[in-house]
Length: 607
Image (cartoon, rainbow, N blue to C red; front, side, top):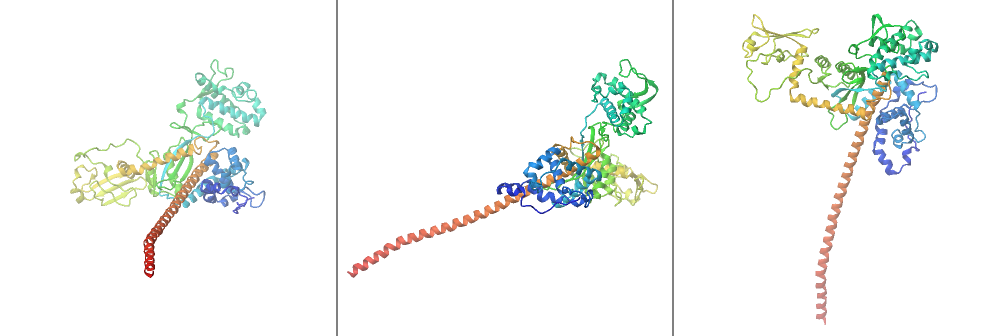
């Protein structure tokens, strides 16, 4: 049954039993700021549909569970460590605004809530909506952003090629033994023992020395064929996920030949019938092939190895305010970053936080992506792939005889203005083909006849004296980018991209993104969203704590200044009073003897 968190604060809260100085320190530090600023950002109503409206036991408040998950990812803890911290860490209890007897959440509660997030894809919703609230709360600008990818690995063992064959066959045999014991027993004993010991434990067949690996790999390929062929028509066995993985492995790593291949002398399957299978050359195996039967979503990148990529985008150029991660999504390692650029822009635009300027590295900045992003109102700032044009050093050389190229014409990719020639003259007419991207610009005869660059102009001259330039949007944009890349302005703008490397390092080092404790594409995606959101919350809390500390210091300095000014005024008054007293004392010393003398004289006269 769905139940929202009760906003009423209890008199029995743990913070009320602390001395005043300790409670004040906790309120000024991250626990107090998390409770005041981060906890209210969690919208519990967004998760109402995950629970029954009235039937069943009331749920643990969503705000509390999400807060626990955020603190877990902020500190990169296991579930057991998280439960222990919630039970005994007073800072967690204050941050979540819990009474000591309420400060408990069993591991099953965390597991069930994550399962609900996986089934409904609410993890993405949690990240996107909470991030939007953080942006509004801090007043962060999203006009400028940067994008990069980082390589991650789920909780699986990195297998060799021989290990992949052995583990895939082993996983299939274990599931077959668990599901259909009689069918497992029908598999030849020699084949079974090559992958499973008599007691059911893993065999050491995949621990072969490198000198024996190639020979044993051929045996494994034949065994995979035997297992796949044996149950080919069995609908019950073929429905197993492990059988699908076994078949996928065979199709990606093996090749069927016309003549059966007999086992060589000394091979483990020497006494078994030959099969028409050989192992493919490693160079022919594609990078999106199966890497482990325990996480079929993993692929291979020749530069980064086995694993997955996370595309990360964040704001930039916000000065003292923290930058916020606005996009975090898992992609295949075998895919190029170039294919991720436009989807990132479209996703940000759909959430009304699309940047006006997106800074990326060369992998994202193809000319096609620059054109597509420009059509969406986003300027893509990135270096140009390919050889760099050497800059001219020293005094400019005399290039009066150098032919002018088409790249020197200024063609507007958006078509908002006509093309200009290197002499600065505009075309009299222009036609564009939106399908092919071709541009045909015509320049007037009178204008070109008087042009000092006419002899070197690449535009084709017509019989009537006019000149025609034929080019493409792609070529024009590429030429403009190459020219702009050599400017100091580009270097300053592109320097912002380096900051996202620190974000990738922070996600891996502080939040455990590099080596996850889970596996499977859906679980990996949820972990990425939770860790990115935890990073955003942590940055917000740290910023607010620091701002509060500076405000407190400024207030104390003002009070001390006022006190110092008051003390100075008191010193002036005291000095004045003291000076007046001294003056009065001096006057009395002068006047008193005179008065005494007058009295004595009068007395004498009277006598």
